[in-house]
Image (cartoon, rainbow, N blue to C red; front, top):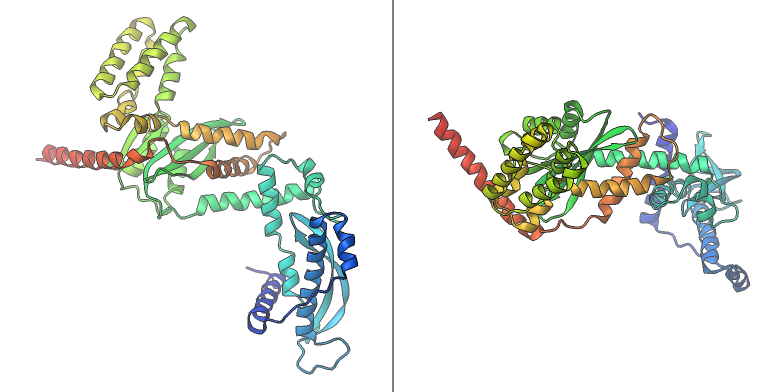
Length: 430
């Protein structure tokens, strides 16, 4: 529920907008040429900033004249009367700049707010500027020294910048988590968990039918368990139809597999990440065997035909059974799902793109870069705010996936596979 001062602010802004649109008064600003030349000594930017402050004062005075009439003149229809002046501020280029404003009292002897002043004072542009500059690597400690353009500007101290960034990053993450997804036409969804500052961040990223990439959501958890993954999938249900056949690229965790099956059912075609699979298998082996096994797995996954790739992996499995049973079990577990892109007979470029979760890994490398200035991590939503902000920065740099022109073949293969499943299911029931 809004408080009275918030309601008064909103009404003042609406009243000012009506004044601008309905009456549209003219505002004239006169600057002596000598004064302009003096301001130009410090550069054109200084002239524009000082002229901008003068223009703001004129705009506020025009609104005062509309509400209280001309100074020292009787005006029966006036809505308020002048009540002196006081120091205030406006937000310019991410900094607070002092400005004088006229105070007004209405007929009920209450403060009459100026809509123009409320607009000049909005914190949104300030928070947006702080968020954008900190995402580009500027630290709170150096923020003031870098952005301060007005000699009397304030609000750029370390604590003030930190507070504005917290509010801005919370708003950004909230928007990320709540934006509707119904308009997205996705052919694939990648879900991966990445350790980040002793936490597990689970991220979902969608690939559109045009090859574009979109961050769908993220969840923080101590481990990559089914509860966290299910919460993430419920999060991306914001208009996303799970009954549509899609390819789901997962990092191989059982929790991810179970959660996707529970939400998407038979419409989910699961591709386990081949990079994770190679890493998991090789980690069980002594150093002298790692390069050879990695090469054989790479060669198997590079094969075009599903039957050839599967036979190569089964042959390697038999070798590993004698060499290292743990590595053999790791290869066998979910091996069939690492070959889903082969079963769908995808072209080579698209097959390589959709065979792993490298797209998310590359996004997290940008997150690491964005977060490099954070020296102390605290409890609460700090990690989620920074990771979410970093993912939004990464999303701005996303390009279309390699092989995006071959996506129609993926859609056709998914449709055919669903039809075959339905036929096989009907035959089994009969």
